Length: 281
Ligand code: C2E
Ligand code: MG
Ligand code: MG
Image 1 (tube, rainbow, N blue to C red):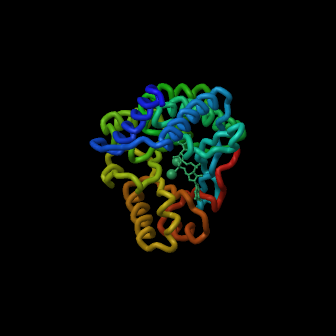
Image 2 (cartoon, helix red, strand yellow):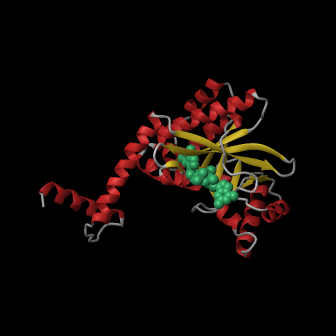
Image 3 (cartoon, rainbow, N blue to C red):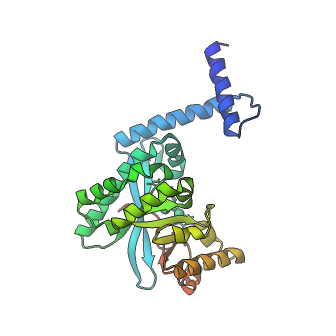
């Protein structure tokens, strides 16, 4: 009915066509306008959430099954939304990564994690804590200087803070990723390769990039008991990591049968609902 709306809708259809690979025709439909509106609303809501301190870290224990004790935890962000309740990360982290707002969220996560580590340290607990780092945060959002500043502010040892990255991070810009990794390793921070096996990297990446630990993705662990190729895959990942002197953490462990299999393979660090869901500190 009016020119501005017509142009805006045409633009939405065009961006959808581009996102689909370009060189194609896409017709506008109302769903596109609604989706765009929802994204805009979510984006504004996220900015407000940070200002209003609505984000919160939950912690999921990582257990050593040989020593029978909790050795550390993974920090997982939650959003205590005043209307929608407890919002899981999958609903807002992808958009935050797209828009770059993940950098600001990441600053908050880093600070909150260090604060928690300091509290545990004061209570005499020697847990380590891992935080998730998106590709967009590297290198500037988690520069060596910023990481150092954070641990020094709270008086914690850098080796207590673990940075979880995914294979994708190593793929985009190899030389800058390598540079960043070496710099943070030099300072004593540890690196876990998260969701291992789901990305596109080759096994040689494990040799090339200085990571400490491989986290076997929960999708393989889930079906280990029933699917022989998943079982073989987990066995191979654990064996390979061990032969490269890397530690292995299995995530998504939900039952004792999985623990027994992992134990036989030589994997001693376990994370999953079997021991605990992510919980408040
Ligand atoms: P992730 O880093 O791979 O975290 C593990 C996810 O698996 C968590 O989901 C956790 O709750 C879930 N999980 C743990 N044990 C089990 C289990 O036994 N069974 C099943 N089915 N699931 C299990 P969550 O908390 O929803 O987080 C999802 C993803 O969001 C994380 O995957 C991570 O990629 C991202 N994320 C979370 N917090 C942050 C953050 O602070 N920064 C960034 N950049 N990403 C984050
Ligand atoms: Mg993780
Ligand atoms: Mg994972």
